[in-house]
Image 1 (spheres, rainbow, N blue to C red):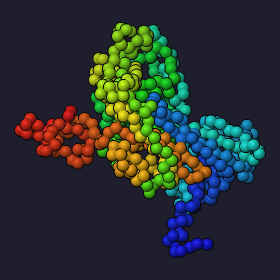
Image 2: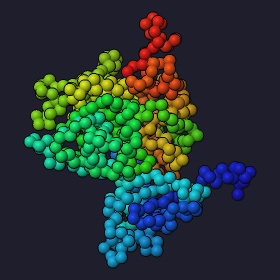
Image 3: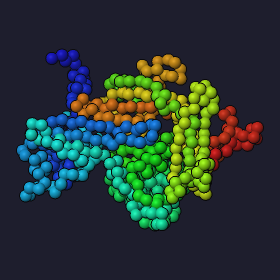
Image 4: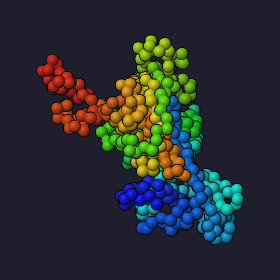
Length: 482
């Protein structure tokens, strides 16, 4: 065996070892299944019974803002009869009353990592149970929490008894997801409620990324209100996709299995930004531009009336805001329209201004065909999540801004992560973003620019000359945009 030195041998041993996966089913205590023995200390008593695993990752459709449902399939062999016991739920003394909709968690690690340090890499609920072809076990399929959005909401709403909810749009979203409608809710208080609203009923602790949604609200949607009106029930997934995914940003599942929202701008201005470099990448699988995402005109219609099914008072002249890049239209010889609607934006709630901000945000990030890169990474890059904006440094790919090889600290958003369990790899798809810095309008409590910390300067915009941060021909200090 080739062993030039102990350090080389140790490094190779770490690189070539296959990941070990553990699948734990809700309700079985410490009982779990695994692909191999797990080093103590560990929270499970695992059976080495998993013969194969496959996964389907989340992918953000950047054209619509919709996100696929992530899933995992786990082939479990009938080691000591355990999986047969779990599937035979009608047998006397069965450990579980049902496997259907039972939560399943997947953890990943390596031989040299104790079980207590295995991170959870998937959380979902069991949706299918199929016998293996040789009758030696069963294949369990679990899907992530987004499948919980495929339920009707606002059942019972009619033209005579409508349901109306008003409040911060993120609070409205949280209330609908949780089925908790209150003017005094700790996390998602509403401004006004009419009728008897019914939401999706997701679990606050395990299914919804409450802290992340509140952070988005307090960073990007301060003092914003919307009003939604229902006169009939509708699918929660369809309502959320139309009013939030397309306009504000996609909903994705975080590393803890909870549903959250990532705005088309960064979700947390000034936060620590993850990195992706050549050292993290096994290979670059593809590079392409996305002309299908190119837009030079954005229209948002608002003031929706569900009874008359028109936007505004006149069906021939709907209430709308348009943002466009006429120079790009002239250069490309085409008008590429992104046509959107909002059922919550209302004129009496500063609707024109809100629609204007959203149209310009969408136009800014889609006015140039973005670059998309797909890379394969080891499972050690699990710190990346769909929706994250990362600083990407790759020496061999083209920089379209310079025409030379290599990009450095290029801001790109993660739009898909697909686990390749058998290879121990992650397929990560990234698309470049349009902003060069994290920034937005600061809160009223912030003073003028000279008093800002460096973190605040990286986060917010201010008016002032670049030479001395002054305005009015240099006679006054620059002002924050409030």
